[in-house]
Image (cartoon, rainbow, N blue to C red; front, side):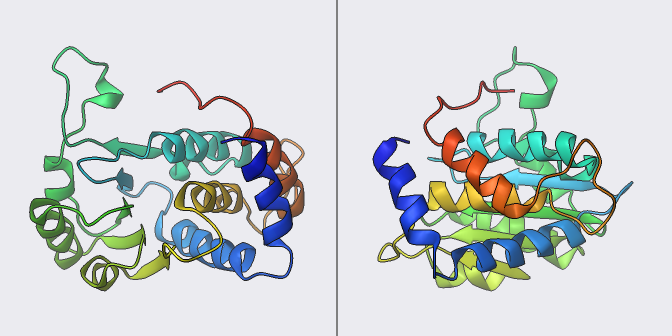
Length: 200
């Protein structure tokens, strides 16, 4: 992300539906991931792994005290010698069921194998959320969907930042000096100029 995108964020958000849409989607995410449940499974397409969103949700989980927001990144290709938290393959989606949430981030149409796995998880009782470009089949999988069309003034990466910033909000007491969504957006504008977080 560069300074142009930061300027875009500041100018475009005012008077648009994006903060409200991100908050609505993040609210659905928060309500679907329950403490002591099966957790949040975050998966992308074969060509796109949502590392950045995974890292920011992990940060929000720590800052907000909502440990259930910390995702498990599900990967299409798992390295045998990699660390355990990066060794979760697509079989985990197949095993998902009631009490678990699958968040699918799809900047392009996923392969049929992933679509079938996510559909199977939904049939087994998992809550499915999709963040995508508007593919009809992807959107049909989601209990809640947030579509970022190619013609929108925002891009999918920036919307992921908005969602992660909104996900840490809750109505409870403010642990660790909790910040408002507006404060989080100000921090987000600063983050967009920083290098991507390390793969955790």
